Amino acid sequence: MRRAAVGTLLWGYAAVALLPLLVMVWNSFRTDQELVVEPLGLPHSPSLDAYREAWVEASFSTYFVNSVLVTTVSVVLSTAVSLLAAYALARSRSRLMAVIEQVFVSGLMMPVFLMIVPIFYLLDTIGLASTRTGLILVYSAVSIPFSVFVLATFLRQLPDELEDAARIDGAGPLRTFWSVLLPLVRPAVATVVVFRFVPIWNDFFYPLILVRDRTQYTLPVGLTTFFGEYQTSWSTLFAGLVIATLPLVVLFLVATRQIVAGLTAGMGR
Amino acid sequence: MSRRRRAAALPTPVALLFILPAAALFAVFVLYPMATALTYSLFSWRGTAQDAFVGLDNFVALFTTEPYATQLPRAFGHNALLFAGAMVVQNSLGLLLAYVLHRRGRLRRLFQVLYTMPYLVSPLVVGYLWSLLLSPLFGPVNAALRAVGLDAVAQPWLGDPDTALWVVVLVTAWQWVGFPLLVYGAALGALDPTLEEAAMLDGASSRQRFWHVTLPLLTPVIGTVSVLTFIFSMEAFPIPYALGGSSGSPAGATDVMSLLFYRTAFHSGASNAIGISSAVAIVLFVVIVGVSVAFTRWFRRVERRLT
Image (cartoon, rainbow over all chains, first blue to last red; front, top):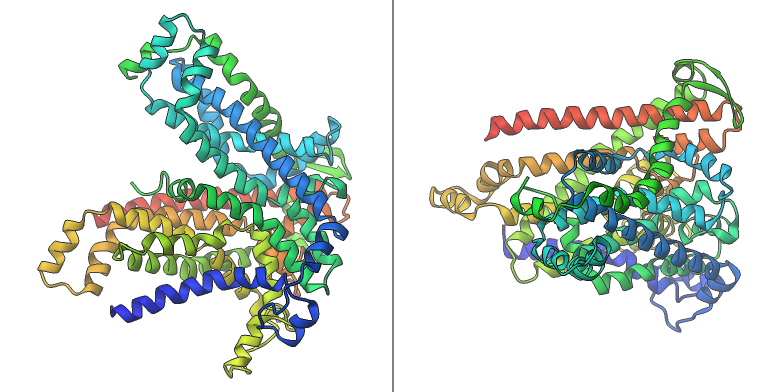
């Protein structure tokens, strides 16, 4: 292939990938009128009105806080219980443990559509319907297969001389786990945190069905009502999309390496 | 069992204690719903109350009574089209870009990151963003087409049943192309470069080298990507929801299995909504598992023939 053609392809597709996102950002700084008169224009006098309207009147402040709370607590809870479980699975020789691990890992193929109705009634029965707590418990549970799988794989590759040394020095299993293992598994924990944060932050299926109370909405499900109610207030819609995306951009800048490495982990042979 | 693992083995009671929190969460919120879901489809329901055991009647009703008898095959056909579209557009483009980038050392990382950006945005945001960009009133896409003199091409993309599903295919591809790109990129990096060099010395053109050396070596990865693409296409939900709403507008042109399930379970108002919607979920699950397993087996055979 000619070099020029290759260059055109690469830069051309870069434009296709990025322009829509840039349009989303700069249109959020324009007024509805500017959008109609000049669909392809840039913001002449950038205005933050759209953000004010989305944040205050369209309750994005509430959705945002809910999303941060639900995502953070779910990720922390699922990573903590998964790490404990992964440690036990990696360091036990029992047959029972091997069976339990199989059950956990089989959850990687979870049929979410099949489970959602029973989950809905389960939360209703235990009084957690339409609450953030219910959502957090569900997210934590469905995160376990992936997190256990990644963490157990990583722990198996760690040499265990350090743990032996700690045991000889008289440390119990919990102490060994906390002081010896935890510092060593930080890279794997970072991967798990990033890779559960993104789908939970972006998820819209569970809250759409499990949460009916608007004050408990997370950003994605908030977006669906917002798009119904602000249909004609276009720049506000763009601003809402930017607000829902911003935390991921921050995460991306902080953790590019983990993301690119993790996306391809386990692929190929 | 390796020697060193034995040295650090945890006593089983302690191990069970460590597993307990995860096991409890998993049992209550994953295993229990999964087990009960299987029974849901075998009963008739009156609202939220379980009624009589009806065997496979819900499945029979799904295939023989309206609106399901019309909507189920239509939605399934749309999912199949999403899969075909993803294979042709998204995976071929991903492979092409990965192959081209593979020979470019310097800028590879930059382009990988650029192409992967849409993958990190919520699919729901992606769907809504494109619904705004394609708007007939102020959409920059039509405006750009008019600006370059293609007035005839500009149209209400999402309002026309003939184009709406293709919009779903293209928007999905736009978001997901980073996935095949990164996977194929990693696989290309792991290939033995001497094979291609040998082909080059034998006088093979770059096109021949791609079709007869590189592509066959990538077969296992292509298989994995295809199966995952199939699963994602069958479960597509946020993008169709954002572009066509829960009814798959216009006129059901973007209706897919997940939307059919969602409508049946939560918006149909039918008294047996739970029975029927559980049957939809099971049909979908069986298709996904069945096709994935069959496809993987078939692909292994193809792979053996090639190597």
